[in-house]
Image (tube, rainbow, N blue to C red; front, side, top):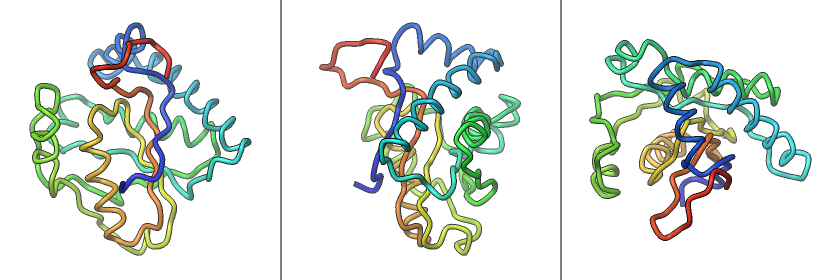
Length: 180
């Protein structure tokens, strides 16, 4: 796998899904900040227990059009909050989305992978060369977005890529609970 480790705080189920959606789609930032704070506490606990600490955090970039429509990049906000809570720097503008992709919500896993293929580009390989990076996102479903971003970073010379996200969509055969 291209991603060395994924750390998530919850399964994407009630009530976490409602909080994330209110943060992401209704601009209710306190919900996002609360969830990022709790993920940051979990990460700090795991770092104390031996989890490899990344050199930098890096938010999943949105396409310019989508960011203009939404008015913010939720992953960037989460990364900034996590950076402050964990004392890990955040790399900004190192990766950009080079093409508009359709929203992933109604796509199958295969369609998601195809949709994300070639969507990202590292703007300065010197800034990622030899580094351990952690991609930050709100929700991981199939991992298509984070896998494609990890591929891009590793091809540019990153040493290791982890993923930190608020929630992960459970596989269909797993029982839905609010905690992972």
